[in-house]
Image (cartoon, one colour):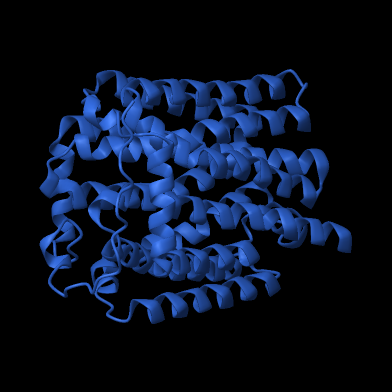
Length: 402
């Protein structure tokens, strides 16, 4: 059995100023042309299916948070939801990336979406028959998070196979806008659906959204992964990525900065407490609070090209994170009215959007093409880990104070 020689880890090299303008990440492209990518039938099916499905998932997030707080009135219980979401995503994200390179991606996505629909159906049925309890909720959340850890890298790996290479920036930018829009629409609709139709029917809306994306996948034609690429996937590829990360501390520093900022300051898990006990705004208000940061992020969409041209990216990231922290502290001291709390959260979302754009540029400019997939997976783990793991600690501290 032949053993592949260990690949040489590329060393840090100065980035040529013109390099960015000659590749797929060029910020000089007109954003209006991004919508042209939807003329690709397969990508359009994936985009619209994921748009509806992601909005449904955000509705479920609101429903779970509200139901947990109604059942327990416990900040610790809300923090544990974050823990059960974080553990599988942190453990399985890189494994999901390897699976996406080995197995049929279309079949993987179908299995993932069917499983996710089943988890929401279980929550709906248990709520209808009044047998819902925290054990069921935690178990379903754990299963859903484990499956979703495979969904993101698989979907990201599919996109380049659906569009021409020159349209990749358009496809990626539209996907980012789509996720921000669903983070606005989903929680807002979820809050109103809970108030009008109840938690169970909100879960059923999520189930319906998964059937939409399943139908889209059945209509799509996704190229299979070439055999020669499958043979290169495995533990060795993961270790190679780890060695590259250690050899380029600038990437680790940028990712760690965002992780610790969100670990110590993300208020998302405590928003049901703010909605119920501090602002007294009910589930509709909770949905608005959950959507506020994404509203701020979406508001900067017309300025993304200008932001990407900031020359001192490290300073820009630091200032954006400081601005984010100021907005979060201001939100923590706000006790109403609702519009003021939303304003602070939207400001935090706008600052985070700036940081996200600049972080992406640093990672992409420092990383050679053959490592970008694994570094993107690592970036996702850091971005996911901070906002999810942080609430586990500070909800415990809040519970001790009360």
